[in-house]
Length: 176
Image (tube, rainbow, N blue to C red):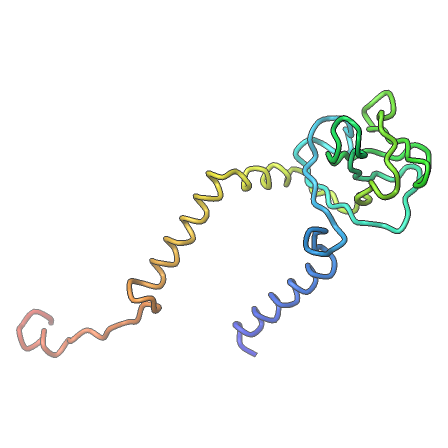
């Protein structure tokens, strides 16, 4: 098996694993990617960390969950990452940040919970936020286009090597 086929097989395997385990909710998956902002969950979760949360069938006390602020409340729809300290899915969970002295004013129900903390990647959220800036996206797109033009050349085909006409130069005395 040549290196190209091995690389292609590896790429297909990685895409399949992403599709099964890491596909976001917006694409029909069961995970959501959240960049931690603020200090309410310190020291475990620091501003700039990337948290992957996964939908679970049920949630309980001491679970760190991401939930949407319930409808009709101030901040409606904002996703908050806090720990469940009481309550239940039907009556509403009491949630609180690990670094907060009191519980949140909202009582999110089971349908408001997006998912439970699954994977934490320290600091990667800063990179995600930076990449999502319009200027950075434009620079990355421009770099990709320039790279493709340079690699492909003006004809749209990969560059080819052209043999040097050495015999003609030898006769003319320019090549020894």
